[in-house]
Image (cartoon, rainbow over all chains, first blue to last red; front, side, top):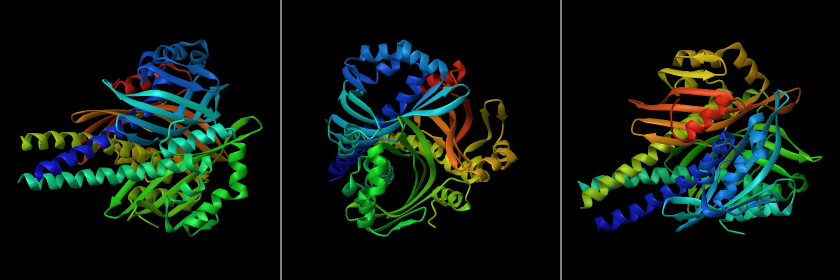
Length: 161
Length: 161
Length: 161
């Protein structure tokens, strides 16, 4: 009886740990990418993880690392920017998970700050030997496109695309 | 002895689950409302839940659903927008809870994005047969009004209004 | 055997409680400071806690309280503003913890809202008799400065500065 109760409680704690691990992983993306920590950003992805962001498609951890080190991204962070992600909604299913959040990109230019973009972010994650990692991330501008809205809807329902 | 320890631990896990369930519920509002998922947004509220937002008072789940389907909201999401809610502070008391967060509304217009509003959000939630739902939500623009500031203060103290 | 399993589970639950307590503490800063709740804001800090924000260095709970009551801050909140903090990444190590998040300051002026600043926030927290409190917080504008980026990197790695 006690062993059964304990086993059920262990399962509940595992689910909380999984959810919080994914919340923490996604929350760390903004600070890491704005700091220019290329290795640490790349390590949020699985080795063969993908990141598809408005026409730029990365298909490996190495691609993500190269994006952080790219002239375009370095120019952004040297001028000052915040990849500001909102709170994430996570749906865990065993060793797989889906997470969704919105984001804004704030840039510093000419002594002032402004919002340059609002985006929809859909994450498909997997649990590997080293814990949770992003398998596929897709980001689209919230400019009224059906695709961006579909990412939000699917993400909130815990569905992949 | 072990049974007592187990029972205390079950209570602690229940409190964590309650808090995370409410965090997840509030976090899902933005993605769902910006996706235009009227039924799913409405389902965040109790059947007779209310949503009072700067002069617009909804008093049922059906009212919330109608708001998402309204011309005004459809116009917003077809142009592109983000109802961007910040991290929520939750106070749980048995089957009742209070949550508070700030929010910004970002709109896409004329090819650019801008912040159109910042708001104070106070949620009163209840646990029903299907889990936590919003009983009353009140949102006010952070334009210096005493009411908006009062919502934040009450929410952070875990008080209803 | 069961006692060992129970003890291990208690440790895991304690870690979840610690992380969520810190998430909640940081999340409450924005609502409290924008409400002008000087005592409650001050109580987020340890008695001798520090807050170093772009040239303004506070070195006690009383200093933080005085900042909220200052003409500068009162002018901000009477006009309308949101100290909007993003989701926090927390690293707990026993009775000490590091947390990092980005933030934006949104102000209401002349009937409109705009982003006035984006910032990097690094928190060093300690567990005292009354729970977790901020020992040291450092905030820098994300204007491209190496210091702001360093705060983000150190915070995400769970390091103090």
